[in-house]
Image 1 (tube, rainbow, N blue to C red):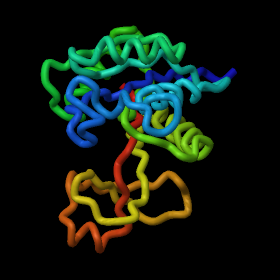
Image 2 (cartoon, helix red, strand yellow; image 1 turned 90 degrees about the horizontal axis):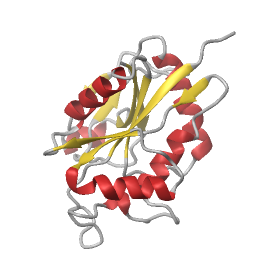
Image 3 (cartoon, one colour; image 1 turned 30 degrees about the horizontal axis):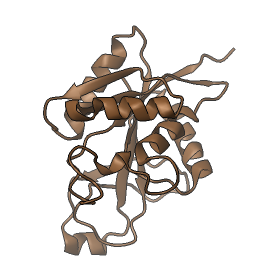
Image 4 (cartoon, rainbow, N blue to C red; image 1 turned 90 degrees about the vertical axis):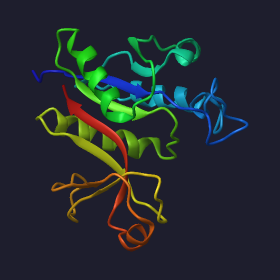
Amino acid sequence: MTDLLKVQPVILCGGSGTRLWPLSRAGFPKQFLCLTGEDSLFQQAAKRLMNLETKEIQVANPLIVTGEEHRFLAAEQLRESGIELSAALLEPIGRNTAPALTLAAMAALESGNDPILVVTPADQTVSNAAAFTQAMHEGIREAAGGSIVILGIAPDRAETGYGYIQAKSTADSLKRDLCFEPKVPLVRGAANWGFQYQQHYLTTT
């Protein structure tokens, strides 16, 4: 019998509420807004992760990394979605992705398990749920072997506000020999359509 792959979803739920002002505010950043459908972006992210469960993949309740000012809002929106919160890790001040992932990995290990972390931002939309789920399942299986897997989206324009990843072109959906660029200058970004925006992370703890 195949051992279950245990997954710990982690939702990065910070934000200062400046990008969609005045709809988005410091106390109510965009991930808590219902911009595409009846659910907020945060609720959509949580449901996508919970839907990853299969006979071989066991998905735990989500762990969120957020600020003190958003903890009750996040918990309430999960309750509305019928999803139980595993834990909320509260950042006194936002320090971007690396510290948030470190906190999440340490918290996941406290359970005594060694789960695969599936990490997602709380403020994205996914138009093709089936393709997302398939990609995540492939990534989870790869991460179970000890790899760090990053999902990327092919850009349709140059954008200096995102981090980029680049990999050798192969027919396989899982590409290796990754190069990471935290921010690509506009001229280089326009020329390098082989780059992809970084989106989701999958890794063992």
